[in-house]
Image 1 (cartoon, helix red, strand yellow):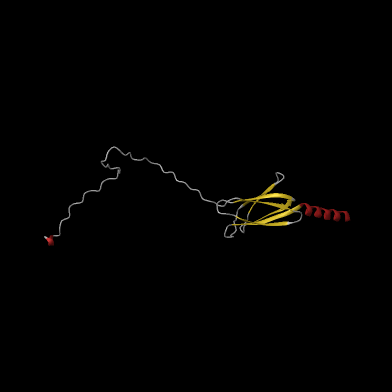
Image 2 (cartoon, helix red, strand yellow):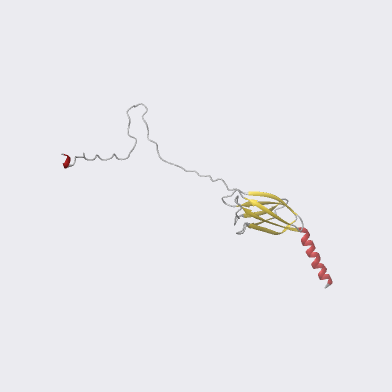
Length: 147
């Protein structure tokens, strides 16, 4: 029984010394939480990575992160991606804040059609509109009381 207790104690000590925790919050320029933002934690020295989504309060957490250097990237539609480098120390919990900037909107419109040709040699104006001409109105007659 004593050996089991020692093994459990040593397991907890070893676990605490090689892992840390990263947690944070993602918010917009007005400090409102950004729910659903994709958060990626990528090791700087290996292919190890984890991903999660920010909750309705903009909060995220990675528990049991091995000690080392990491890059955290936050991506959300309508915002510019943001990245930060962080070092995880043993038995620590890092709390990070990410303020996302609004991304620039790029819109374009394609207009198609044809241009009317112009006779540059003639000074006589020509009609370039294909709209129908307005009908001639009947001449107005004076009321009978004026006659």
